Image 1 (cartoon, rainbow, N blue to C red):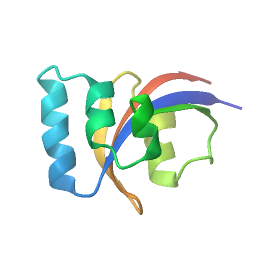
Image 2: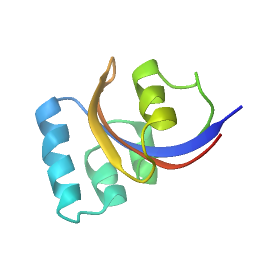
Image 3: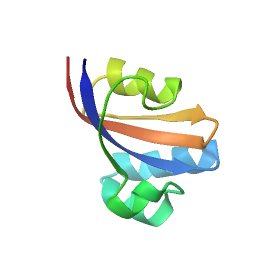
Length: 93
């Protein structure tokens, strides 16, 4: 079974997610932004979610982590929790 490790920033609005993504593309540190802005408890760890397998996260989240390129910030991705910026750190098939 594949495993992946990812980190994310979770915010309430798409506009906020887009603003943070712009900051990231201008060189802001992902971990620092997660600590400051993420509404997920993982924010305290810089957004780090650790290692997990398919089906452990909501479907929209899984689609990014297990299908999209690694080490690229994807989003905003909408789930029932809000809007995510997601970066897959590694994935093994």
